[in-house]
Image 1 (tube, rainbow, N blue to C red):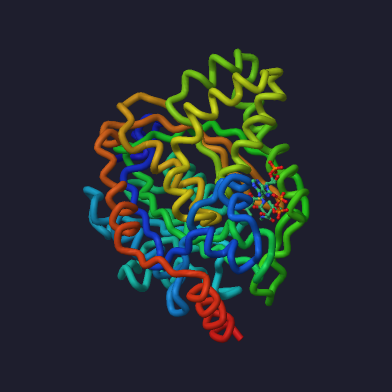
Image 2 (cartoon, rainbow, N blue to C red):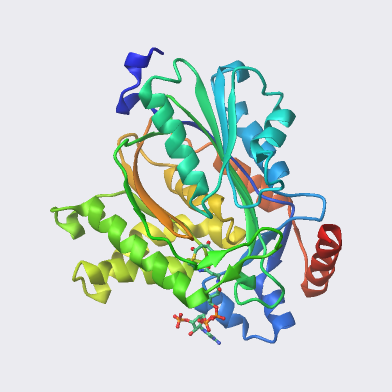
Length: 372
Ligand code: CAA
């Protein structure tokens, strides 16, 4: 491909790979430990299970596995990767980028730009946008980008965020749009805030929970308004095959979409109907994984794209605390219908081990001891 071929229709997702860690905890088990009604977690927050990592396993291992899976079903060779960029908030070093650990495992070296992007849960989306814009600029030439969103989301014991925990990785090769083209026009929104942050040296985030919900809703309202512009909001959103959100916990997404609907002057029934048809079905993998920070939105997008006919459009709303957000439009390509990457999630879900409340306590103690 030449730089001249880098038009909108020629750039997007050429391959996707996903990876979940080997352990899972049903939220009802956590409710037993915390003396909560399990319905608070299942109905109140919309959570089902959280993916968990053993002590010797984390963001790097998931990123490497997701990348291998994406590379394995891509029609290009490793020496065509000219950029590896990892979006994460699970950095293991303040200087060395997480991409270096992943590139080392993949045997990726030489004329390759390698770096890490941080902006809370929005980091993976920024990485993807940079890869897309690198391709669109012509600077990439014939090279492709390997973009990975990977995170381990753990809160302090008994933190209100604990039932929303999770972990996972999504790798995407940005090249020809076999799976989906990405529109170069997107709709960002940011406002500096302290809604969720993790000071240097601290193991767990500090969260202003209720404020974080307001920040997320503000961002969603502004991004969707920019997307709709002067069009009719109901028509524009109804035409989409799917609407995907960053999923900190599924109920957050519903609250945010009802808020977006309210800002368009819709009644509850209309917003709820669009939510049920276009949004809720894309959160099946998230419900079984929990919040995987940077990977959560892209897991939902991967689920939504699997099975779409070429030409069908979806939007993806990315949110990262701090806060920054962006709404992207994707158009399904010829390989979306086959949805081959769904096999990654199916096999990881099938093979993972479910632990109980006691197993969870033990795991957290081991992880705490390992990080001390
Ligand atoms: N049966 C059914 N529902 C119940 C119930 C029961 N027995 N008990 C409580 N509930 C409901 C409550 O009514 C409430 O529902 P509504 O919000 O619809 O009223 C829901 O369960 C949750 O209850 P609380 O509001 O009391 O929950 P909480 O305060 O303990 O925790 C939270 C909620 C603050 C969001 C917490 O989960 C948290 O801090 N999460 C982390 C922060 C977060 O995810 N923020 C999202 C935006 S920021 C972001 O997106 C970045 C990111 O990934 C972290």
